[in-house]
Image 1 (cartoon, rainbow, N blue to C red):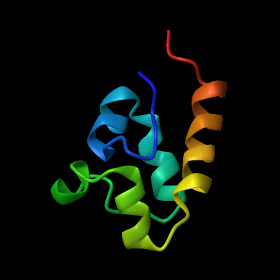
Image 2 (image 1 turned 120 degrees about the vertical axis):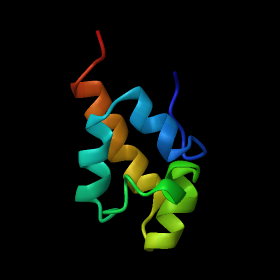
Image 3 (image 1 turned 60 degrees about the vertical axis):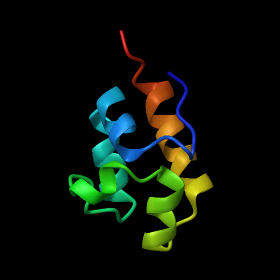
Image 4 (image 1 turned 180 degrees about the vertical axis):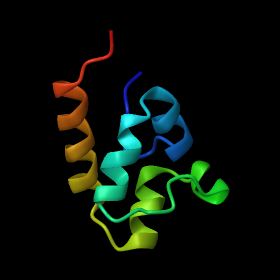
Length: 69
């Protein structure tokens, strides 16, 4: 699965729960909120005043250093 800024928060967490830690470190403390699950990363970043490209870079770095088996 290729993750992008348009990937929903729910899809990201389903793909790798470790992403939750990344999102919380970036300031998204509502990762488990039911309304956030259907939002894209881009939408969630906009709500929190974050740069979606920067957050996506952190997620990609995490995934590259923690490959799924």
